Length: 212
Image 1 (cartoon, rainbow, N blue to C red):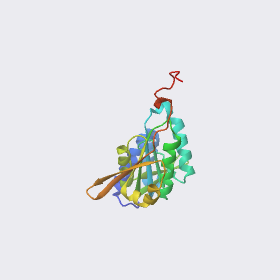
Image 2 (cartoon, rainbow, N blue to C red):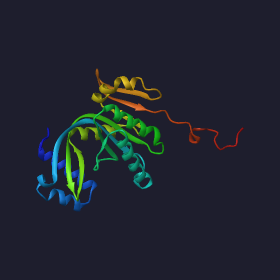
Image 3 (cartoon, rainbow, N blue to C red):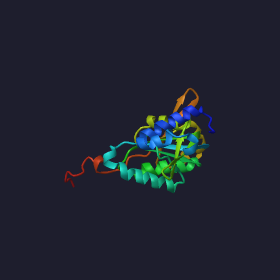
Image 4 (cartoon, rainbow, N blue to C red):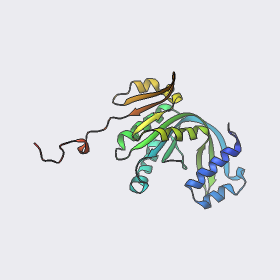
C-alpha cells in the first residue's frame, strides 16, 4: 500500500466510509478477506470538490445525485461512491473543479449547496466488489475538503488557500460573483464565492397583490 499516511489509518478511514454508505454485507466482503485480494491502493493528487446538500434527502436526493454524477462526468471529475456528505469529486484540473462548482450553484437553483474546494494528495482505494470496481478517496486532504465544506455558507463556494492560488486570476476576473476573503494575520485562510440571488416572486414585495 502506497500512502503518505499510516496504512492502518487509511484502512480505518476506508472502513468507516464503506460501512456508512454501503450495506453490512458489502463491508464484510471487503474487510473480512485478505486486503490484497479485494483492494488496491495508489497515491492520487488533484483538486477535490466536496458538496453538502441543504434539502432533505427524501425531497430531492435521487434526482440531485443523478445530476451531480452527470456534472462530474461532464467536467472530467471522478465521483467518489462513498462520500461523507452529498458528493466528493476529484479533478486533475483545479479550473474544472471550479467550473463544476459554479454550475452547481448556477443551474441547480432549487437546491442550496455548501461547496468546498481543496487541493492536495490522497489515497485512491480501488475496491473489487461483486464484479465492480469502486474507487474511493481517503486521506487527510479528503478530510480537509469535508471540513472546508462544513464551514461554507449554503449557496457559496469556499476555497482553500492553495486552491485559490491556482485559480486567483480566473476568480478575480469572474463577473457576477461576489468574493470575500478571510485572513489570520497576513495569511489568507479561505476565499468564498457567492452568486447574487435571482429576482423571483419570493423577493418581490408586490407579487400577487394585484397592484398595477
